[in-house]
Image (tube, rainbow over all chains, first blue to last red; front, side, top):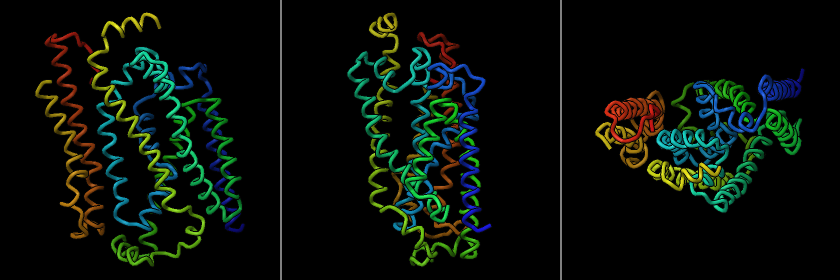
Length: 281
Length: 82
């Protein structure tokens, strides 16, 4: 077996296991909107933890952040800082939102804004912003995915082919099983990610440089490893930063909006207008 | 806002203080920690330390809401934090 066939076998094995996990996740569940969108609000502690940890590890973690660290060095450390801090903020905001969502059976951010401010226009704006800003983010993730698969399969699978396959499979299991599919595929992804991160983070420094410490001066001098193959295929760094910036601003806006809601929503949750709204809903 | 809440907010502000506004204090290469530059080691160390801080915040937050329920102050009778 050539390295190329081995790589292809592994890639298609992972795709198959992922697709089966995704579709199977929705079995034994009576599908309604509540089940599809928010998993019946019944995810356990470990699943939520895996989801929150897993959503951090996207193709940006593998390609964008590491590529940027390779080319620019130090400033990339902000990733570690902001990812840690965002959960501190979430701790104060999310439980309140969860409670309101459960009480009024809300499913989306747009629902939440309509409920909170009683304005359909605002909720439409929120929905539109969400869709609009998820487009460059999706493009970034799918481009990264295409590059990774293309490089990993020794050019056996072209970039557009990889993106098409991935998109069809993801759309398929999300349509059939909703958020449960995303959650369980994310469990699979996290396990693979952990193996990859540990083997890369420990394996590469010891294999190529004889330890973690000697790697840094070599990386600094720009002669780390011949990464020309990977470099040839990677999209331009500033592109990546730009798209990530888009997504980040989008996230910040939403967090800011949620924070405002978290603070003021509590005080006025039982106000007369709110109760009246509740009665009409 | 009672004393527990204020302490928990201060505790939650600690990670921000450590990795966000104090960058010039720890942004250096030496001393190396386990072969890592000092700034990288500092940031990695603050991942578990942030979890510790948040565990403390959670306990304080829980205690403060429990007191509210027990004292019957206000109309809040929820055992969820916030």
